[in-house]
Length: 311
Image (cartoon, rainbow, N blue to C red; front, side, top):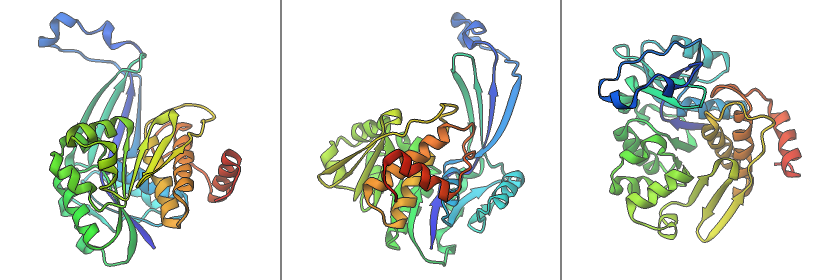
């Protein structure tokens, strides 16, 4: 049975400036700033939260169905999806705009200047769930256009799909009432530790009150692992130490794919969290957001080596 994933589809262009921004920016002239950085490397990666999560699910043997909007420049990304057997029948192509794009320039101190063009994502509501006729039990609502996120979440809950809510970068743009509406009735509400603090600050509610809104709350904490709460039960999930830290970009999406894979397979919350932890670690070991290459058999072997038990 398919796992439905909504959210952003984006093309990431990552550049490295072989110097430090601070050497070229005059603090007292910021009001008339005009700078140009000569970058020696430019890498293009296919990303977006929906695309990244679907990639991880497919790697683990699932059949993800992405419902999202893309633009007229999606050809190379479409070819990438076809190469990896990720279906595209849930995508809506808008030929009068670009696919969402992120331009990231990083200096030698790992400072970043980022420009994000939402493009087709701003019209994500045009990717309608009513067009999906096949059955699915699990779905994820990832960061996208706010109106689309609200609509998709409401429709999925109405269809009694077990829905994971992942507000991500859009969290700060939700009004408190809308954020609580997203959480209410969700099978899973997942955020990182900073986003969890923002959730509490924006809603004015504490952990116990928020945990009562969704069936399960998951908070990721990077190298410190994650915790999962269901009712009064709280599970501590250890992080998996990567063989080498290459690039943390996309680690959170990889965690979500492992977690969702486990939940769809009916494993315990603890095992599902550990599956997420391992997927996140594998992503950190590679550069780019869709760069992990591993068979399900090898993934099972790595999981058993890390946790001393099979899943």
